[in-house]
Length: 167
Image 1 (cartoon, rainbow, N blue to C red):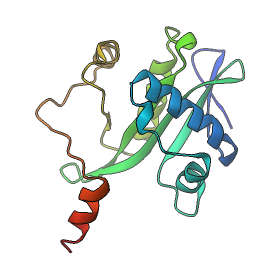
Image 2 (image 1 turned 90 degrees about the vertical axis):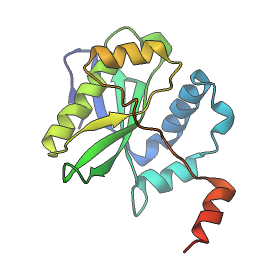
Image 3 (image 1 turned 120 degrees about the vertical axis):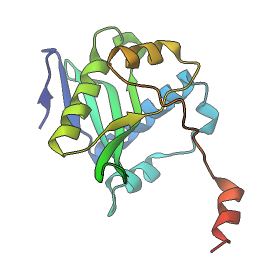
C-alpha cells in the first residue's frame, strides 16, 4: 500500500520482486552520477535474491510522482552497541535529475526517519561522497551531522579471502 506524502503527486511504496529491474536501473543511474558506474556488478538475479529471497538483506522503497517511479531508497538495519538499539543505515537515496528540486529527497528521508522512530531505532545514518557538496549541504540543512572523526574501512576481493583464512 503506497504512503501518501505531503506532496499530493508523490507517493512512497515498498518495492517488490517485480521492481528488481527498476532498482538496478536506479542503481546504475546513481553510480553514473557518482562516477562509479564501472564498479556496478549487480544484476537483476542478484538483486532478486538479495532483496526478496529467503533472507532479505535490505529493503527498498520506490518514490512515484504521478504514478511514475522517479526515486528510490535502499536501507537496512544496523545496531549500535552504545545505544543498545537498532538503527537504519541508508545505503542509497536517488532522485532522477529531472525530478530534483521538488523536495522528494527530503520526503524520502522523512519517511525513513518516521520509520526509524516507529521501529524504536536510535539513529538514521548514511555516507556521502566528500566531493558531493550539494548533497552535503542538503543533508546538513536537514540537521545531519558529518562524522569526520570516523574513517570508513573496507575489506573486499582477495583481501577479504585472505582475512577469512585468519579463522
